[in-house]
Image (tube, helix red, strand yellow):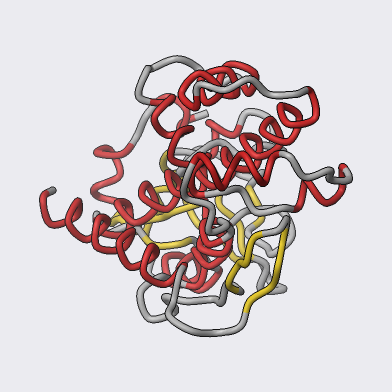
Length: 250
């Protein structure tokens, strides 16, 4: 476990180094010079994690209270504010709020940050901070998902793909499925966790079926599953009882 934790910590340190490389071109956004973010860590992260990496990299070089105050004073259109990268200062204070153990309602996080800054904000400035906090939550979620995903990879899980399912079907093995988090657009996604038997039809379409199912299965295709979220292991059928649960039998 210590090795996994160390690898994750080293990965996050690498993120910090790559988010602010020396030199390079940049743009002026909200009165602050921001270096352009590039896709990095291709040799560190599996490709399925690249979307999370891109989200994490979208932080501006605003590191102090004074810099943030100047940024909040700028009149911004709603569209510009929503797409403006959140400042690292706001991201860090949002993480500090999370340590309180309270649920991060946006208004509560805004109040927490405003109290930490010990300043009064105009309505426009508070609206801008509210949007910054909203965008910062996306950064924090991506970091948490990355850590969870890297932990699963280190535990021997693999991203689901059709080749793994086809090999399991060919070799008469079962497949154990684990979701890193519930899919936001699917109902009863907890039913996708557990033991499945693979199936490949005559047209080469790949499915995962509950152990007792005869006709119904989950199609593994590019259109309906978020692969960076779904992990699998193949197991011998003789070992299926180790992974069986009530959900898998249904």
